[in-house]
Image 1 (tube, helix red, strand yellow):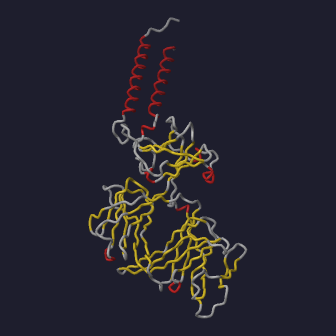
Image 2 (spheres, rainbow, N blue to C red):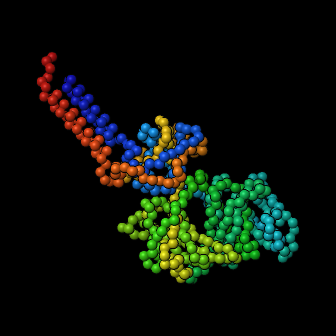
Length: 454
């Protein structure tokens, strides 16, 4: 009986040693180290990973990201990689719109109006504040009623009568009381006939904020279109912002076709194409794939242009992508519009920001480590990492930031993390093997001993 107990204990010791060796991770197992600075109240800190840092990872889903303290101990952490592509997070709402009239020569200020609304703030009637004589009024813009939408506004979608083709530019302002207005930037619509095809642009991006009313004021009121529909896309919870890359050079394998190789597999949501030549016009189709062994899959299409109107450049150089993971992109251009030149234009791509939250344990400074193609994912759900977690709690956490901005330098190390010989782990497994052999010899010796007399 004593010999059996000894064997059981030896087996447990060997198993514990194996688990310890196989689970042990250290900063030296990762190719890139990025020092972190923390501020605010802990022990939880949130860090928005710069794109340059993300590109140092060896795994597309960032499974090889870790945080270590000064003693080299790993910290518990969670990753948040929100996306705008979840359909159940978006709502498209038809909204009412009201014309904004003013005198034809009153272009230096926004139209003054009288507004009638019900108890809920829904607009019933919008009229000029002063009576305008027939032939004196001009359509300056439109007032949109978004009072029924209780979520952040992400996109405006408009349609208009066919009499107004070409480009339509306007400013966007938001208000909750119809008295105080905040600028939300500019919008641009387009409807062109090109090579017997109609090319249209109906969507305008909004900043992801809530507002009860929107005011659209046309740059050229004399050519303002007559709206036929207005829709607002809202989101229940705001996604993380987009982060943009530096300019990426490409190649042109043949006329009218341009390709780019991304640093690694990425879920791209926007692509910005440099249009260096004035008066460029190009209907395009964008395709993507994971690697050169796979066929190209269409991702997006649209009209790119840089045109001079009234002494100003009118530019549309972005394409929206579905956010699927790709590493190669191809732009096919209809050269009947003049093309984009023999040389491939540079592009910038945008991916959804990634936020890391870690629980600080032990003394700092803390280090972000990444760059290992073989380690397994170690992140936790936010609800596990933070007891009683609610999304609003993120804003109360301490802040962590990358020291030195986005400059990321690989660590000088003889350890290979991309499939070569990892000498540290090789040595640990050698020690484990010798220990197991020693334990086996001890067990064999115990089995050979004659049983003790009772």
